[in-house]
Length: 96
Length: 118
Length: 119
Image (cartoon, rainbow over all chains, first blue to last red; front, top):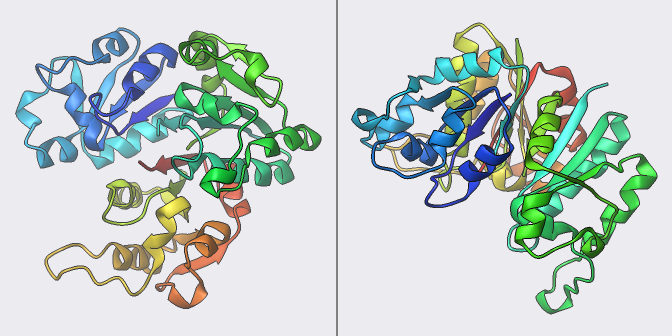
């Protein structure tokens, strides 16, 4: 399953919930959630990385001036990559 | 037939999602799909019985969950950790629920074809 | 592959409609089909033809209309959510139509993937 998260870990506990519940597949961070993939931010992301690959949407990082701050092990994708991730996984969930 | 899962993570009344999620679930009943409804995080508050909405002048939609089993929608799942963190037990809810661990719920999500989160 | 999209938020207030649009455009560019975009909750406000954003801003409503015109994307506004918010037939921009929630479930059944954008 592709797990899609769009909120900052400082705003909502969504990433903590995903860390607890999600069993596999991949995680894609979009919109305000991209902050979780940047250096110096304490979030449950490290825990999630142990279970699945993590992707972050480049255009959302760039818009927020954060593209130089991405932590290691996270893959930056564009919208085409977003589409591919949805297509590659047999189901997806936007954690709203 | 596809497996549809509805994931509720928000408390009722503070926003419209709980009510409009229930409306989708009701419609889905007519399509004869395999439906499960999940409550976690603040979504567990959507099932608490005894609410009186007169004072906020909104419709109390929670009791409508009770009619869903008449339409073969009776798989209500609650994540244990979310429930316990809020001091709730299955006796507090308007319908009979299946309590799952986070890992069990995650595995159930993996099996779905369509997951709608409100 | 056939994609269907659900949008739960109105234009401008949240990024949901923008993200959904860019996703749809990328999917079509990659050779996929976007069969239907369903507008629910405040998402119904994306369909109002009277929206007039400043000249230097993107026109979210027109963008959706154009996508429908050029790629045959079915833009469906939920009737119940629309009525609650005063979004009726007479305010719809080109390419949008009003129908029931059943169209969302049908899209989920018929498409290979249903992707939700919200808050």
